[in-house]
Image (cartoon, rainbow, N blue to C red):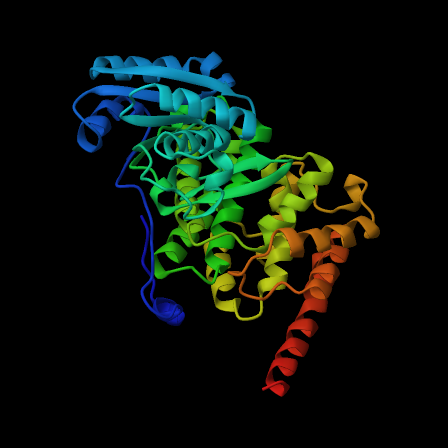
Length: 416
């Protein structure tokens, strides 16, 4: 249950109306996939045909067959597109758009991890949009309302089932498709679909969800509702992610992480911040999973953004400290969690040098700017941050940036 807090002036952080996006309905709990037909009847039409987009592994595991059976029982036909083998790129986007435009579909269902759900969003968008995938990259670029979307995650991490965002890789670079109309009509959070996820996937997707929650709370676009969703996601992950990592058959832990990923997705509608930009630059050079790269960046992102965000960070730490008596602060908790998962925590361990770090800092600022970051991205300060990431010494970074924040405040005052 989400407890709405209006402490610390959080209800008035934004000037003007606050925006909060979410699906119209969520079915949750083990076995909830059986209610898929009711969702279609309620939110789409009494009967029709859907395009089911899923990744190849999910199809082999038989989950797509379960969904098709549920569709048949409620009088719906389906076409399966299961050529998703990784992050959507131009080739697979064009392929799914041809299928989406050729059939008379009433809705699109996405089944799988973040890549499958993102491709389902692309399919729903391009089914009604006349251009190619390049033409919908950016913010609010859709020329028509997408087909209705129902998303069913089989990992607990990306939160795509709750967001307005789809990611696509074009010319080897991540590009964002960002439109409020891509928030699905409904989502199904069924823990039985994630029990087969191996520990490494559980860890990286769970850390991705943690990054979404924390970055969403730091965003200047955060609202009272999104911040509370973020805090509850952090609390759920602190309680259930270690348990799900140790025992994939712990259905309570699996369901808890699914709730957390969904809530983190709601928070992410306020926008990710510096940590995701850093994560992209690490991924380009290492090929590590997205969740691993943004997790490595997370403590350093917090250190960079701490000035002015102290109360929000304290609120999140208060949620964590209920479940981890050993950690001394949120930075220590993140590091301990990553070590327990066997995840890398510094650039030098990945074979990257200080020169690499400086090049990555330049890429971060120029190619992945974050106007919603609570502290502006300045090349010199971001470079200093990356140099600390080489060693992974978060204490030295915090000390350095405490002085840096004070100096920045003095400069801002004297410039007025």
